[in-house]
Length: 284
Image 1 (cartoon, helix red, strand yellow):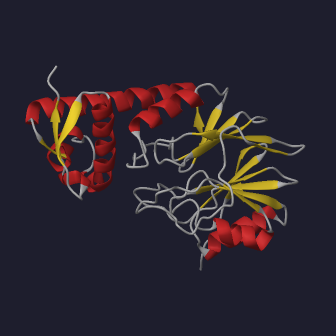
Image 2 (cartoon, rainbow, N blue to C red; image 1 turned 45 degrees about the vertical axis):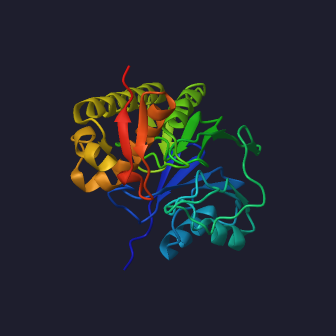
């Protein structure tokens, strides 16, 4: 028998239901948030699992007016269309063009969400914050009344996120962290994991971590000379479980692309497989 879903109260206006899709990449599962009481916005409905679908409907109790997604990865948005069709809710988000292998291609909206748009009810104002980086169509959201930042996959509890070129971009990721610092949040509600306090400290730690990793990439380029991502990967991510190196190679690619843009590295060859392309340091 399937265990009944747990509904956690994250703040006065916010409830959380974790989807039953826990894994090494999703932690305890994708967080689905129900925002508001009289008119409910469902943020990141998650994968299309029947038990999760029924749990959202039960918690929404006929008051779901919006279905909102932070980005269109397969652990965040596949249930969106079904939930919107069942409840008559407005579907809100941004499609990704072009797609990538991790995308939920079922997600379709008539108009893409834009930075600064707000959902407003007598209870709450939920503001969209364009935060590309993890992927190019990523949005975070700020709940003004509770001063709560919904970070999707831009900030996760207990781990850093994978940056996924070509739509994902390391410079965009760092710039988006700076954008998030301008919001007076007192907590972060991540797409995976538990409520995160002290947003300013968390954002600063993430920035320093990414810049530290960039220095490890530069060090590997100096030490190994010309090579490929597969050559640099075990050196740059020697502190990461090798089982996660399949995903880490995407972030390494993003770091190299940033260094290329910064004029510090260049490609020496191209390949249909990104991790077989040649790279080298540009001598100062």
